[in-house]
Length: 149
Image (cartoon, rainbow, N blue to C red; front, side):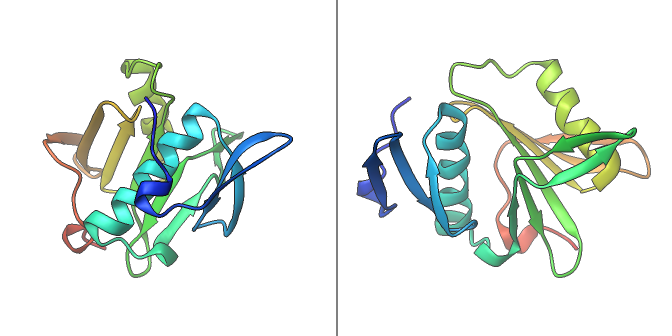
């Protein structure tokens, strides 16, 4: 999968380390990798297509799960609490039960009502009822206004 960054207004640069693009959340240039490209594409879609405020997005922050340090890809906050957790994979990585298990492990700690896994080609989105320990698959990525805090 090849993204055309300049056509959507994302700043890029090429240096001795290769292609980098400006991450509007971390406010710095990030080296391009297949997974990072998917992460940046999703951030772009969330902000520019679905109304997510850039200041409500956290990227690659550490959490603890069963005394192990884990790092999520994207976490969206509502007014006060996290509400949407997204795990990104490179386009050549298939979305499998293991990928879903990974985001579910992170959610054991975070307890957000929406989860998504994506490789940039396919997305799997679900709404989670933490209290009932159930989930429902969605056929779309929810816009920011529809996320309950």
